[in-house]
Length: 399
Image (cartoon, rainbow, N blue to C red; front, top):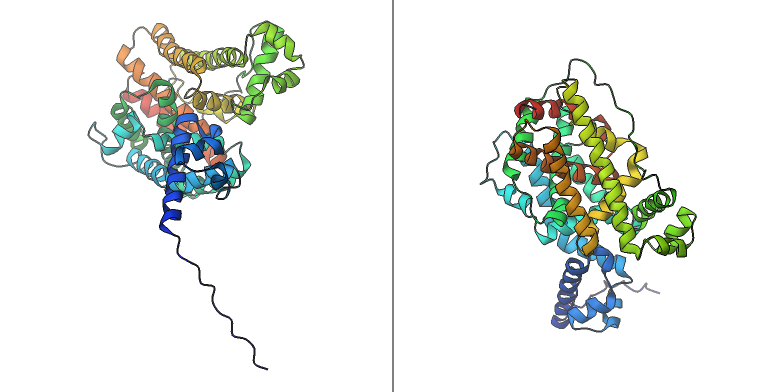
């Protein structure tokens, strides 16, 4: 008996209606993410935007995580990859960066899709499903750009700084709206990378700085520290009062006796922990200036960031940054803190031109926000020679 011949499966081409609906759903997911953040995706809202039923959405996507993956793969990743890779190339280019450089306008005012890309970097580090897709891709981008063990320590630092500027510009713009002076900041770092050479003697590492609240009010400190830990793992939306209460060892009622609502608690945590870090970075500059250190204390921020003891705090800061898009009180506090950093530096160094103070402050914020967002995407940051570059930055600016 002859065996039946196997026939290839013939798949029907998607109907025009199905194609239109798929495009409408993807557009609706994009609009919903821009309006409410990646953590705010809800099937019913996506359906309403797309003009479909909720059932039609669930027939395409099992849950909100799958919607986010579709958003990343089809909308965000292509534009965000180009933006990150081009920024790295520009920062490490032999060609000077001017106001007319194509990347400058993107750094000063990142597009909505680029902003979603920066938000994805944060969310992927606590969302396992999203992280399974996003983390390997971004890790590959960084490695292909030169952030790998075969490269020199200074060249790796150049790649890491380029990526930090790309991501940090998008994150800072959540708070400030725009990033003024990016042509000067970018060119300063670019020229410093090219002028950098290994230091004659190894730099003495600094110890890990305190990254917990110390208001001298025990209950307040416990709540602030618990808020930072919970929010670093769950994001703003899922950081419930009940979970914070359990982590801090107090009752939910006690929290409401101290704060009127969750956002007031979050704002207090932002205020205290952000200012704590700013005091530390400012003190590093004062110490470096008094000791006539060549790097003006600019390298200390990289050291602070790389200590494991700082991980919770840094992730909390990232969550605060992306929360500014949709939470007015958090946005208000973050804007205050950003402005205070520049003012505090100006008061500490009255002999430095105020315009230069503004550029240094903006540059530090951008690089700092972006640098800490890269931790989950590469294991090469500790082997980068940031000090060699920062010495040149300080020298170029007469710091």
